[in-house]
Image (tube, rainbow, N blue to C red; front, top):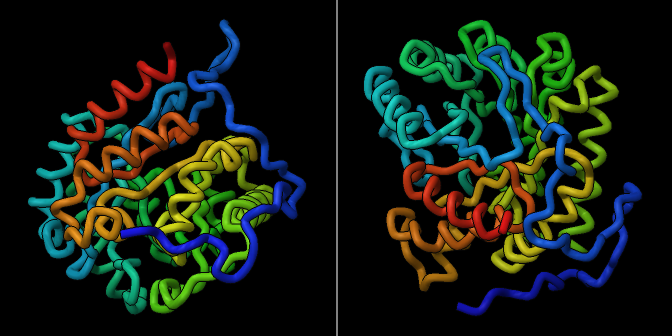
Length: 316
């Protein structure tokens, strides 16, 4: 299937970002910190997460309706077993969510999200020692999760969904992932439109990072996510992946979550989530080459091998 143009509503030719970040030429593959200079580190309550090498973030959804693993981890014991297997396979962080954000998903009430999440989080926290991220847009859910042992907040609304989220992350001194999404999960795939998707996403993320800093979040506690599949066409996703270096130039670690997503299935002729492993592998390798520091994945063992080879090439 040929991807639609990224310019259905405008041009992608702009070479500057409204925030002041410039669209620079792609960096030379394998670029890294000078010898003797420490690489970036994400500091969490469960210990530091060095970002000089790519970190795999294992996906664990305590939901009945997530697009790929919905219903698989509602039982705390099953979730804990999966978590332990992911860590053994190479996950450096686990991301737990209890509200699906797939296209068309409807919001889950706060109490229901807490009811799903907290027993699973408690079991996973007992089973593994790696940092745990909680995928939520609600400050009250994030607060309960942090009290129960979570280390990182992953907010697909980038702090816009709840005015208490960024101040909470600042008070608790925890890292926060800020993601771009056009619209909401209910509306985001209804004809997404950009004049220049790369410039607009970069400007949005720069603005949300500034808002987080203004709220008191430490600069080195901020991670940016372009929101692959969140209010983007196939062509928009491809453009963002091809120019991830623009986001890396904003000065924050970049997380990419493209595992098994719909645009991969479309590029492969309509394959379902379970048939997108090799397409996902191609995306992961490209993301490593373009500067992503964290990769959110379902298939940790396969991703580990992809990253090992991609990093070796980038560092050659």
